[in-house]
Image (cartoon, rainbow, N blue to C red; front, top):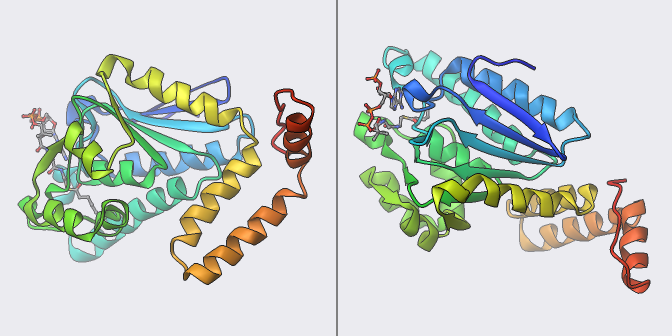
Length: 260
Ligand code: HXC
């Protein structure tokens, strides 16, 4: 599929999606959000894709936010539609049946930070900067930042970032648990690829069920969540991968998973 504002490449079961509007620091306008939606729907349907890396074009920004120029003159109805379009994208990424790794290569601000938060795992270059600067613009986050940020790093820390609009560097993001790992910028994509390949070698169905159990279970009461986990665990026993994984262990050989 060809996009105006995205680059997509696939190799060895890993798709790399690059938000590509470097002149606006990869800011998300309606067209780019629509393309992300179409792109991730395509990746969901493509059985050859087992992991996804999401990054930004250029050396300066992952995504510097929603496009401020495009938002400035919106009325309330259009603003809500724009927010809901963003939510659709974030929801699709968060619930994609494949792992999505954000490779944060620079500014991840506002909608850009929210995009990274919707991914499963975040790696950052040591030049990355994170923040929810919406209050500086007289608005609040609109792509899930008030919800995913506190769920990830805790209410108090999230509120400090949300209320001040302050930017933090990659080291502070690591300390807060906002990112999983910080590496030199030149090594970022390779580090993300190594992780993606490692996950892609596992049973794809088991990885998908893990993701679903974490994402959905965290929104439930503990008892219901544990039952949800048990049901997902049981479902694994309907797969060839469970037979293969356990046989391989007992036969002292590496497992060869088929994703079925
Ligand atoms: C539109 C943007 C942009 C954005 C940068 N640009 N961020 N355009 N929307 N979010 C454009 C600039 O206007 C400029 O265009 C070019 O990219 C380079 O940016 P500079 O500001 O010149 O670069 P620099 O001085 O290095 O500063 C980098 C920066 C700054 C600190 C990242 O650009 C910045 O503060 N950007 C805005 C960050 C922000 O507030 N994000 C949250 C947006 S609200 P020209 O044409 O002048 O070269 C949001 C809400 C989400 O995300 C929810 C919506 C429902």
